[in-house]
Image (cartoon, rainbow, N blue to C red; front, side):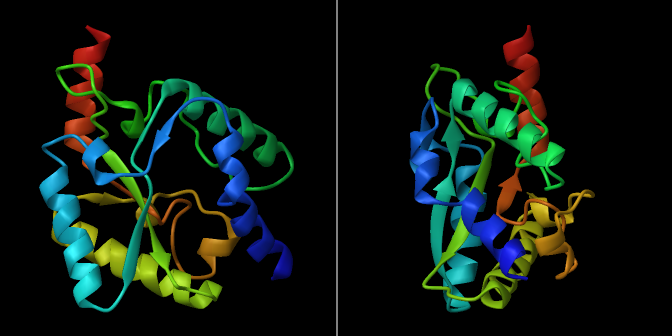
Length: 175
């Protein structure tokens, strides 16, 4: 278990700030269509007693590409990849009409949580809150890493997205 918990810490550590590109961990970086639903998710979690932190909202294509590359290395080492999406293709990489950050996804984490069991309980609550708002939750993604599989979750339980918004924004940027 220690190795698994170490992998979780490794993928979420302070050193992530050293990756190239930009990552905005602020609800202000969310697309205006997603923001009300995320605000409602956060409010629901806080009502349940959770301290909620935005760990990632919008990220540049350069940062996404770095995360993708590290994920490929991790997969070769037998770990679950961080992302299977290349730079520019993530819901986190989307822009508003004016060209400013307009993420169609957000990663939320618990504050003040010490144990993996507590973190898993937070992510389960996050999944319910996200689904209550009609959002897609990363804990329901098919592929799993061994840490979250123990709790019946998919590979990215911190992740919440508006899939339809993301598709629409991607289509606009591709044209």
